[in-house]
Length: 458
Image 1 (cartoon, rainbow, N blue to C red):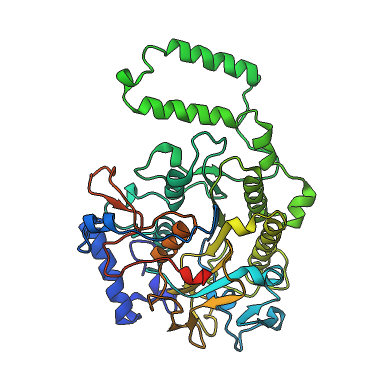
Image 2 (image 1 turned 60 degrees about the vertical axis):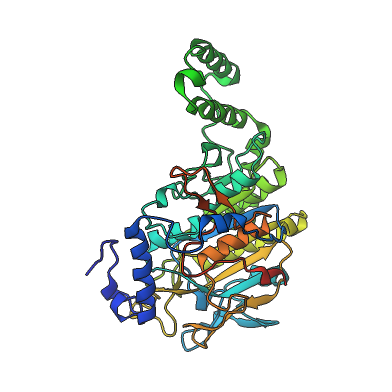
């Protein structure tokens, strides 16, 4: 029987809502209640108190690369390795300091372990793909009636750190094409969607050529001069003007084209796939210094209900499997950023929307949706080669939180961590929201108080 989100609970061992622990059901109803109420502003600290509160950002990074592992990777096969009868010898479980790691699946990442930290005490709020993917990207409950006004984390970064004179938008989203946008923030903070293939930035030329395009665009401005004014059309006219200027700066620009142009040898080094291409573009964006500050990369294929160790899933023997492709692309990206002197100023965060069931695989030799999950981080001078948090021997639940708030780490805490790393005060409130009630960058209206995981730098 499917629920309203199209999820068949009866087929997912460990995901049946009514068989879940009572505490998880209470959490679910609490957040659905928030959605029915239709407000970010549940009982909690007053906005006046929030406005006076001052966080202390660690200011360790200039840029963020956020990798959305869409589908939900199996934490016990990747970032929180647990071994049992299901473990393939080809996984090559290897110990690096305090980290037990699937070296056979992630050999290139193993070479960068000194720059990598793992959070193993993370936990999702829900088990529906669309809900949690949005939750992770906006850092709050997407079921709220006001969720459509909530901006993507990258749009907040663009507002806080974006340079209006830069050529590239501050927020670039690679291999996505859809998802949360800028919400109520100005259009200049919207994600710039690109699916790079190595042949340059598409849709940036005119059949008329540069001179012909500029001639026609100039004629349009002349014809519209009297009507294209703020007095005649309202404040949106300036936003449209800025949009056009930004778009023109991307056209016929060899520096921009160079970011998205790479040869076959470079594509092969990164795995010769869409994820590898996105990682090359992310590296080039940071090297160019043309203005990108928050880069999202969407990596699909992690919804492994069937055949998790065979075919193109987490098969360590197949270089083109999802697991090996992720390792090749991310391991090469970290190595290149380190070589170019960019890793110390770039925080990389890789996570899915939730984890997957633990222990023996299900009847389809796969794993289903599960609340417990793990997160991989690198760069920004974090303490590498370490783990924050600990789960039990099966990866089922929390044993040691590993951080100051002594509970599971939620998406809102990771949102606060990204802001803090970039020098953004996560306690800030915007007072220009459509309802004029104040919009907290990180929600402060929930029963739990959220905070950055500063232990990454401890």
